[in-house]
Image (cartoon, rainbow, N blue to C red; front, side):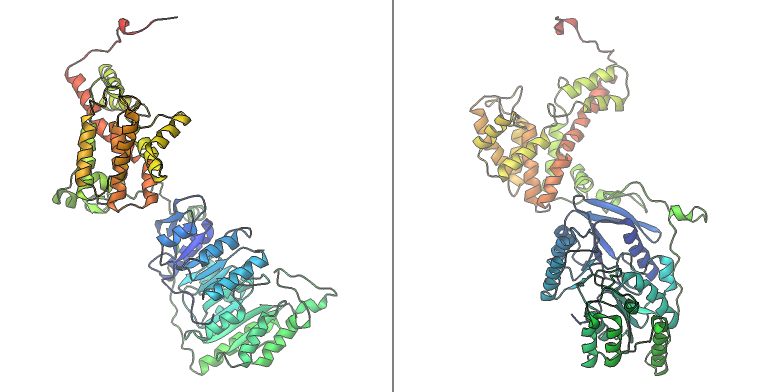
Length: 608
């Protein structure tokens, strides 16, 4: 292990298994230290995706949430620390998944009770691949003024009291997370404070040892002295003894091994940690303390004298000029959360909406980061605006032109279709524009205009699975599902929908690839052999060609394409287009001053 420091002011982490409090504590520590960027780059919460809102000082930020380790690492390649808050049941598997990612350098496992066999595998893999494991059963670690893991050092008040918002000169390592907090306070009282502190964890097999970190501290120039707090049980401290004897450590080491009271008990005592029990004389606290003392470490006679020993070692270094006096800085005030600030009147309120497509702050509105003036000056059209607001990127001109063609071709289909009929009836009832429009839009669904998404979904699945047109159609038939995008009430094989032909002509002329559309044409050839009205309709044409647009542009990942189809983007295109026609029908009826519509009796079959 050895090498140098693990963290810096730019270190970022991925946080596994969302826990609001430890993440917020990390972000508050970032703000306290004056970091420019949050230390939590992303959250991994199996089974969910999106964003979590948290505070970075006074500013509320949205931290991305990913469902899998590999996806999070790919999205945040600069995040090299993995903080694992999974339970002991799943901590090993998720930690191994993180260690296998090339971007992850340090893994901290918080859970206690991880099976020892699993921990050994993690340790072996980490050593073989030059990676660092902190824990299991750890609170984590901290580099003062730079980065901290989860709940390390406790509350902000404790962090300020321990002066952890700025670096000191002491490297500290312990098995215990709780005692780490106590020692941070002790060290801050009698020295210039901590530079880096690590709690390796209290399980029998820690991912990294006391000596691993002491040797690493020895290579960090800013660390002038080292404080070690061990405990009875195990033989970890003896590797530190050997390192001292071999002269591998040239900085003062002040150490204490707790658990000396164990000799007062007649039988073996299990203390708080799994590894805190003596398995023989050599594992006793007394034997370890004596071995450390004999190897050259400063070891007091009791824990009560530990603080004095640390103070004396620090003062000696200061007298020798090896430690320069630090100028104290006042940390910024952390804004209080609402539930703790009501009495004091200092509050911060969370936002209730997240928006990633537009921003109306500043001098002018922006669509997906593009200023309104740029949209006008560069001659953007409706298709370009849709690409910015729907897809959050500027698509190539042939893509936006295709969108515009779809809007034009689907704007209206006469007064007799269900949507237009509803709008006309509502407008003639004297209702306003919005009511008339909505009454027509509400008819859009699987039977009217809403088959675009289903057509894209089913054709994509069939093509991607390599089904022949026969296999696709017949499998749908067995399921009792009509093939979306196939069939028309009026059009026939010898009387094709002109809109479909126009879309196909444009795509064949401009698209890099039309594989989905050509597959739909093959399916149409098969369905026409069954019935002359089973032609590719405009829903099927738009659905398959939009798949070709998304796949052929090279601007969308497969997961994004699946999400676009699933969310309903393509039906959205029909809704947008048909709204133009429905608004037109509303204005037409009002302009003509048409009376209340009543359906004629002769058009109704009255029966018992």
